[in-house]
Image (tube, rainbow, N blue to C red; front, side):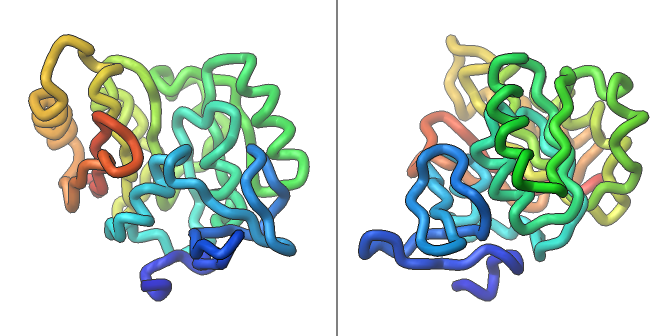
Length: 211
């Protein structure tokens, strides 16, 4: 199974349990073993996508635009194995934690910006990024992905975690997911979808590429 993991992500044993891990300083109290730290899929949608063997296309060393970085739980793991990693987060308080996570990660660039307004960080983020990872708890998640498509290389990947309750708490998640997929297809070809239910209630993982 490990051959599907990006370079820099391994399955390691922590407290007798085999778990995904990256090499870097602890960020959110996760178990560590030497230089390695466990990647908790219950706290990370991307971690869940990797645990579920979704075809993320991640190989290691990519340039990444991460939308919805929050306090850095997942994006710190990404920066451990990727190349330049731009971390966009709108809320000032989690950005303080994000800055702390970036202290020991020279490839992690925190941006206090709104992912719905990519023009506000277009001067910072390089064009043709390899991967957009998106985990934003807001309405219009497909629209955010479409607006940020401008940064993605032609052969790049979108790794999107859709939170149904952020779109509409009154509707069935399946109906919300169907709408998101339909809107997303305006600018992306969807390669794979999978419910993240095992780790995150009412979430759908999507792998897509620009069309």
